[in-house]
Image (tube, rainbow over all chains, first blue to last red; front, side, top):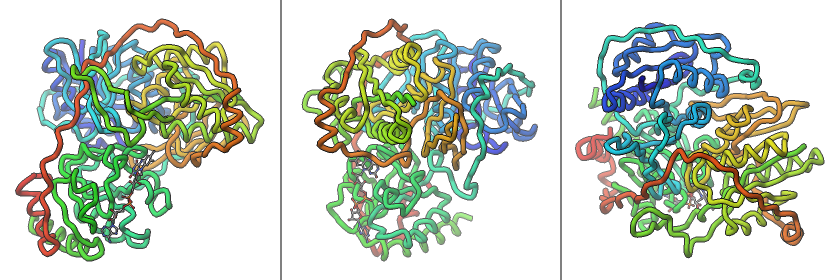
Length: 325
Length: 245
Ligand SMILES: Cc1cc2nc3c(=O)[nH]c(=O)nc-3n(C[C@H](O)[C@H](O)[C@H](O)COP(=O)(O)OP(=O)(O)OC[C@H]3O[C@@H](n4cnc5c(N)ncnc54)[C@H](O)[C@@H]3O)c2cc1C
């Protein structure tokens, strides 16, 4: 028996979310007194695989198959399910990334397992197995008991800290059998903007709204984000107007995020916007209207004109970063 | 072309969320329900595709009769007919089994869902339906066009997007950008009243999960206002007081 974590790579590299799921899986495995097995799928080299060994896994199953170079939900589901069976996994954990959100429910069906999706904390395992997840678009939490013997969990990025826990690890090749049905869908092209921090994983997010007046003023937002190593985001009307791409739109009808720091500039704080960002650990709001509802949901507020304050923040961020080095 | 759109009936986006004293149940009295915003995108796309190909759009909802008003709205937007599986939507596994069972008996060319529902936010139903039917699933689809026997979709992935080609049938989760939200017109509203709405009974499904309790986040303490002249101190404060930078 084991706890199995599927660790996702992006172009052959593990991101922080992979180390988060490993750390999370290690905590569950230690509680259940089971070994932790990691599963990597795709084109990942030996040195990168060894990095995954620093978080408590005793074994890394490595699936390297030309047909599996890019993430493809159907065959990946087959691989994860077969690995889970081979390792007699009691709990299967993966990141609730875009692909993880598609793979976890499929694995649950294949294994006839209960699913805890978008989990934000370690499960309560003292009696039963209860996971905590967001509900009602960030306005509430639900505690869900998983009743099946085998359990599948997808974990929200940025909701569990990375804990190093060096153990002796072996990398073992793993081969899964795929049938033609698994490979009906074809990924024709993958387009990534690799110079940017990916929004769901970002620890710091600089987000701006209609208060920025027009797309030509986003240079300041991007500059501040770049200095802070942050991802950029926007409110819905901003992406609706085409000022920014839909992929930056956060909240109720966009991406729900929970970074360590959310900086909201020229965003009023409508209930639909707050819904998907209110679980951010710290929120800073810059708005010229002292009555803007966002101030009620913020930790720090600056009442002022973005066009006057942003240049100051950019200078201060530069100085702050310089003083850190 | 036959298209099935899965509809979820959710509290309005501005609704206040309250739970019973024992925290076990959502208090729905006084709450306005709407068609899940993402499902509305899926439906709008389905109506466009059907109009272009002379196809048919069926909507399906797993839930109690209270959702029929929402279903009529979907018919007003342009769906041809509706099916309600008469059971409380216990969890995503239950819902997916009902819909997959319906599709096994009534095959379709594609199943469109919203990428997530705004009540449970799981994104699990579309992926589970696809697993039960063993067909492809494109969960975060930003666009969808038909090219001969295949569909071409743009799917959101970590740090970018991918272009996918899939044969039919498949399941897609609609994201913003896939279609413009449609507003029902008077004729649509009138005709919706008489469009067929069939009620079917659920199949039995083993229960694999159960909500034990709900809770609400602890409200933040009062905001700390920083005067504009001192805005530059923000980052030092975030470091020393919150350690988030
Ligand atoms: C079904 C539904 C779903 C929705 N989902 C979402 C969602 O997912 N995400 C989302 O964001 N919205 C969503 N909305 C929209 C939401 O209701 C608000 O309309 C939206 O969030 C407002 O965006 P905003 O704050 O950028 O713009 P506004 O509300 O126009 O606010 C602009 C703010 O900028 C401030 N401002 C103006 N000029 C300056 C300046 N020079 N300096 C500083 N501040 C300035 C103003 O004081 C104001 O507070 C949804 C709405 C509906 C109906």
